[in-house]
Every structure is written in structure tokens, then in C-alpha cells.
Amino acid sequence: MAEPAKQRVPLVEGRLKILPDGKAHLVGIKCAKCSEIVFPKSFFCPACGAEDVEEVALSTRGKVWTYTIVHVGYGSIIQTPPYATAFVELEGGGYVHTPVVGCDPEEVSIGMDVELELITTEERDDDETVVYAFKRVST
Amino acid sequence: MSEKVVVLGVGVTRFEREPGKQMDEMAQEAVLMALRDAGMTYGDIEMGFLGNVYQPMMAPLVFYSLAKTGIPITRVDIACASASRGAQLGAYLIEAGAVDTCLVIGVEHMPRGMVPMHIDPQALSPGHEMLHDFMMGLITLPGSYAYKAVRYMHLYGTKPEYFAQVSVKNHKNSCLNPNAMYQKGISIEEVLNSRMISYPLTLYQCCANSSGSAAVILCSEKKARQYTDKPVFLTGWGAASLKYDRHDPVETSLSEGNTESAARKAYEKAGIGPEEVDLAQVHDAFSIGEILQIEALGFCPKGEGAALTWEGNTAIDGKIPVNTDGGLIGCGHPIGASGCRMIAEIYWQLRGQAGSRQVKNHRVGLLQNSGLGATNVMVFQV
Image (cartoon, rainbow over all chains, first blue to last red; front, side):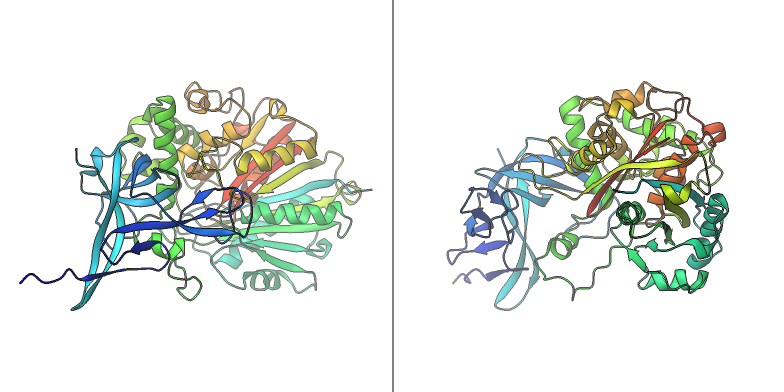
């Protein structure tokens, strides 16, 4: 009998939501006053300063808005240099600052379609810790 | 009736990796030079600001080592913009008539390699950008500028050589500056072939950590008249920090970013526009930084800063000389001190004392100094 998939637990609270059915999405805020969508969650709306912001589910897909390839850094818990990182513009709103995985860093380009990917950083008997990244959408 | 603000004296030590001196000694050296330049004694100083990022409690540690004269002293830390922020704060107080003199010291001692970014985990919640994104390898200073460079190349088709030209120019200029860390010119090829740090920024397109000190004495015009008949005036200044822009997550300044905002305030206060600026010291922490800043300051339209640089217009003999002393790239960057180094170079240029670095027209000088959390712009005139 196949083992049920382990419960996945985000490394930090407030950015990544994993639903009971295993689907995952990032969470940002939407301003109730001016409708701005922002990631990660902001205490006040950075566009208009309002306090009335609501948590909102963000799209799992987007395009690379800009990127770099880090050769010298402070270390990453999921990658060794050289690795690509990017600002991804999500469908429907919000930008995510994220590692890019699943392809050669030299292959990353502005406008590239990417989607949310979860990466396990620690496994335990009953559950595992995950972080988010974005990977090139396979065609 | 508000007082006018004068830069009365400056002092800058040699910036180098291993100065063989501690921070208090470097600060004393810079302060002595500034006091001699101004014709003042330490007893004439009524207020002190110290730009320093890494050493807690540095204000009393340094000012008391000069002498305990009872004046109000404050350490200013706004990262790389600390010293110029200290100067702005002093200027406001002189303008308001609260004090007649203010000594602004910038000093830093820095290790080699990547700029230290230790954040005490007790300081921030785990989801805070600086902890989470840092762990994910997303936070590096070269990376933050590299994003801007990649976006710039995408928008304007800029060749990497154009970015490298900033480093070539600033190393050429630093050879004319005995205080600068780098005393050797470099070529475009050497810049582009140096170690890749964060694509497309190579090692020589990144400023180096350095240790050193720079000091500036600000004075009310009424008191300055006792010391000089050719005052250098600080006529305008403005400051800003990052402003959210839904179209620009990496602050490439596509719309009014923090430099435009700070510059607008400084130009308005000084009563001038960018076309009147004769020379500028700007924040070239990375090559793309200088290019974006000269655009944001209004010296050329957006997207034309790279070509303006490539064609030699920002050289010492160019239309709008930028970073005549070598800038951060040529001088090195002791974080707390760079703002005062910039003020000193403008002061020397405006007084015609810049020697082999002297620019032809020198009536209006502009400073733009950024840091994590700040952009400062200051206008100086004779």
C-alpha cells in the first residue's frame, strides 16, 4: 500500500499556504482601499498607506521580470553558486523575489514563464519542511 | 530668518584595506586636517555627528578621544549614506540657528569580502525579508544592483562595455587622488574579464570594502565670515528612502524613485536645476549605480546614461564630470565615511584646489549618496 504523502510545512509563516489537498500558493495582501496586491504581506498598504489590508491567494504562475546569476553570495539553503534568482511578476498581481530552479541559470531570460515549485529542506518522520522557488514552465 | 550653511573645512585620510590604524586614530587624523583647513580649534565645535555603521557606541568613543567638551554628539547610521545624512542634520540645525558650527566625521574599518550583513535573529521575525530571503540566497548587494543592470540592458540594449566604462573612468580618476585605494588604471577588458560576482556585474564593477575616515566642518555664514572670504555654501539638500512602485520592484527608478525625490527637494531648496550642475559625486557602489544616478539626477534622459558615460561626457574634461576623485569604485568604500569624502571632493573642486583632478567649470557641485534606507542629495555653490 502506498504511503500517504508527508504533510508539508512551510519554513516560515505568512508567505506560503499549503492546503489539505496538497495544493500550494503564495499569500500576499490586497488593499481594501486601493486594491493593490503586494507580496510578501505588508503591514500597511505600500501604495496608499491604508491599514485595511486583507490576505489574498496569489497565482502560482508568472513571468521573469528581471534576474541575476549569483556567483558570490552568503550561501543559500537550497542552491550552490552559480544560481539564478529573479523577480517574478505573477499573473493577477504581485512580484515575488525568488530562486529560479529546474534549469541552467544561463537559460533564464526576461519574460520566461515560470511556476511555483516547493523544495524540501528538511524531512522528518511525519512531515517535511518546504520552501518556495519558481521553475521554468515545461513546454 | 534662516542662516546660510557653509562648508568651512574638510579632511580625508587615505582609504586602504589595511590602514594600520584603528578607527579612532583615523577619525582624529581627518578631524585635525579639517580643523586646520577651517582655521578652527576643537573648542570651536558646538555639535558632532559621526557616520559609522558597524561599531556600536562609536560617537562617544571617538568624540571623547578628541576631547570631552560637553557638546551634543550623535552616531548616524543609515548604511552607506550615514556621513552625508549627518551633514544634512547638522545643516538643518545651523540653518535653524541652533548652533553655529558642526563637525561631521565619517569613519569605518571593514574586513575584506562581502559586506557583513549579520542580523541578530532576535531583531526580526523569521518571515522578515532580511532573514527569510537572506537564507534563500536572494540578498546580496551586488545582486540587488545586478537586477537593475539586467533590466536596463533589456530596455535599452546596452552593451556590457558601457557599464565597464564607469569603472575604467573611476580608476583613471582615482590615480589622480592620493587618498584613493586604487592607484592603477584598468582597461575595459580587465573589468569585463574580472571575476563574475552577480551577472552581469564583475568584480571591478563592484566597489571594494575599505577603511578610512573623512571629516567636514559646517558653519553658519555669519560665523564663517570670520574665517574665510570665499565660502563654499551648502545651498540645498533633500533626502528620501525607498518608495513602493508597482511597475518597478527593483528600484531602477523608472518613475520617481528615491533619488528623483531627494534631488527634487535639493534643487528646489537651492533654486537650481540639473543643467546648472558643474560636477557631481554620486553613489557608484556598482557600475550600473552611477549610470542610474546620473539619469535620476536629470543630467540626461532615462536610458541614455550608459551612452553618456561611454562617450566620455562624465570624464574630468567632459560636459558633466562625475566622481572626479574616483568615486566608491576608485577610492574604496568605508561605509560610514564615503559621504564626507564626497563633500570634501566637491569642496576642493569648487575652491579650485583639486589639482590634477580640477574640472574647468566649478561653481555648482552636487552630491548623491545612497545607502540601505536612504538617498541623500546635496547642492554646493560658490
